[in-house]
Image (cartoon, rainbow, N blue to C red; front, side):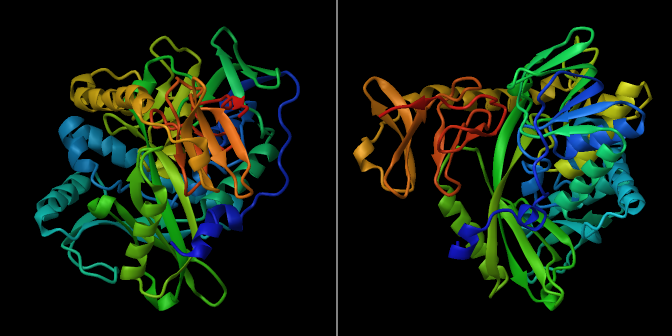
Length: 507
């Protein structure tokens, strides 16, 4: 990875910083609906509910659209890699059609919002492709094209693309979208507030009482009383239906840099080959240059050397796009459900006024917009044709889900036990800029040595469910491999489901 790429983070955050922070919740509040989380799912839900006449409060631990949504590759498409052939087999042709329709209508709805509000968010219509270079997988692509077409998408099988290298085959779906997600969501937040909605940043939620009405408690002690509550924190911060057992975290890396306009790939591309590679471009400057965005190298948080993964991704970009100047590098985090389909609906079987949106499997933009419409329909008492497809309480897929379910739990158990048996290096062996789990007395601590040589020590136990964290050297963060919680070098929560920091320790 180039030195420049190491310096800059997300392009979306750099080019749409969002102004001064909104105030945190400081006093008790009564509203119709409390939405926890201000990413695409949370803001879409809050915006829809406000337009439906509900009073809404959005509670965000960080900044609006600065978490997962601020680090996405920003492809808005109903072509989700190789999902339709699997859905046709596991949910039947009807389930696949509902999936395609729900995702496509979400995109069309977003296009209407962009036009209505006049949002300048680099909205561009592009064709989406899922491709392979391995000739042995062509039949898989042909089956996917047929399944996507049967589901109602304008899908075709192709052998030619706009990529600067040959492919063995590709599924093509026309009329999809790429855009600047943060510009879109910041505009959505402003319009939400203009119509009476309220957004509180820097507000960490710690508790949820599902009484009548519900009560949401925050770190500051202030409470929000609401008839309905939506948990849209990417990975749910509350587990009241064993959702943790049905979700697994996955990180992916992104590198980006400028290319000439005549080298634009004119489409959005993804392949399951090479540990995933995703390619798209975005408008960059008045000279017409484009920003090439390459995503891939997915891995479980807290495992392996992230710097090596960045180097591999950068090398791939340089090999296929010679001369690209990689000036941005960042990472995003996705949540995969064990049965492919996101979990959107009632939080648990007994829930009457609490809802969840999670498990978008890397397709959170169209999925989050879909969730906003679905949850609004459920809260306002309207019918939604795909409620059953996304219902978190679904049981009919339990048998099909079992292998993935047990694999996920075995991986969690392996980390919970095995990570405690790993040898710990001495503190003196830590070089500047590195972190490791070390033994100090009888404790295993997470210790980071900064560039000045000072040590920063925190508890190594994740405050979510107690797994041991591991150090991500490229992003300088402590990560939990069990459920994906992330902390900075002083223990502050960067990403949930953990809501409390790692305890500071003295050395």
